[in-house]
Image (cartoon, rainbow, N blue to C red):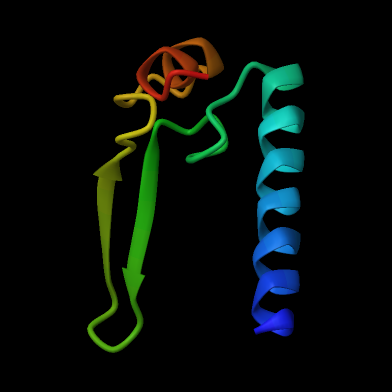
Length: 70
């Protein structure tokens, strides 16, 4: 259980670091400012474009923070 707690805390710290970095750049932390997520399936060689739900496709930190109550 101690190892799982350590990994969970490390994961939270990494996410918070990314949020802080993206805030400085004014980019959405979920999509890194792209406004979408690229999902690739190497088996079928299909790439699908998914609109980011964190920022509703704008890629802006302000929109992300409003939608996620940050």
